[in-house]
Image 1 (cartoon, rainbow, N blue to C red):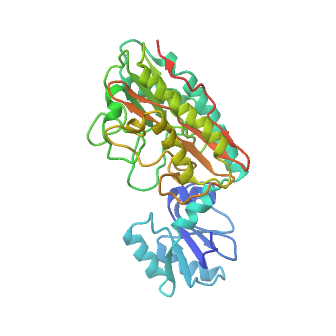
Image 2 (cartoon, rainbow, N blue to C red; image 1 turned 30 degrees about the vertical axis):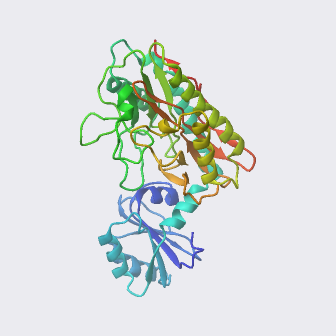
Image 3 (cartoon, rainbow, N blue to C red; image 1 turned 180 degrees about the vertical axis):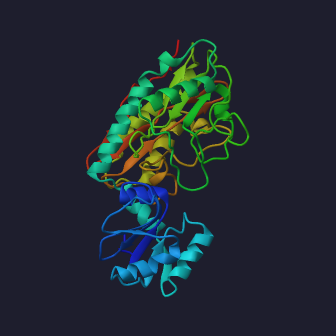
Length: 371
């Protein structure tokens, strides 16, 4: 992370702190290029260790470094994509002799390649995620609304150990525990950068279930929280009542087939842009381009990295420059919105290897009847 000419990085975003320290605390992680990290902690006050320094404010950090015998950096990396302007200015003031540079890209790149320990946590979340989804049909009762089904799924997920926290980087998305989208609600344009939005229950959070009754001939798309370990998986399956029209079934099969092709192509060295183009091209060949990743409003990607946050690198998008690396964890979600029916298509989470894409959300992929 300090190979971009930086002498040190000072990080404070909770997701980054968890990645670097293995736990969340209020404070900063200081990563020098040529020494061990230092943990500058404001809260909780009980943390202790050889490299733990308790501080009251960021301005305490330089003097604490000098007490440790560490020199102050000439080029200091900050999380400028995530920190507020006022915090960046405070940190610049605390290190007046340092050139402040943006370390967010380097941190994102480092987090995108998971260690074996991290991948073990992803696999465990995937197994628990699959277990919850296998029980969804048993949660449905006649006359249930999408909101009631979402609550039932959330309750089951929490009982099975879901942490509830749905970590998202940046300000373009917010969500509670996931999306359950029924019928026409799938076609509601969303203010958020999700593949599927949903009307939601209130204008203050216009996403997900809208409270409408689950009706025959419509789909229910379930895309709920897979955070069971701090490293999450992302998974979507489609449920239905009664008979669906052929166009919905065919579009869903197109999504499944895109996943088959992805598993063949998504190896270390593959272009994220080329994988997006493969998915969009298959949708166009089968006549589903106008429904691909939305209908009234279309998402500009078909997949994304997953880990501590739901929107990590790499991103599978038309202008992406990302190249897949061994140890990436990627969620692929080719979805379609069929007017009058709802959303179809699946999402799986994959670990990228040199010769294969390992699916860690291995569950039935057909549309699953609720009745």
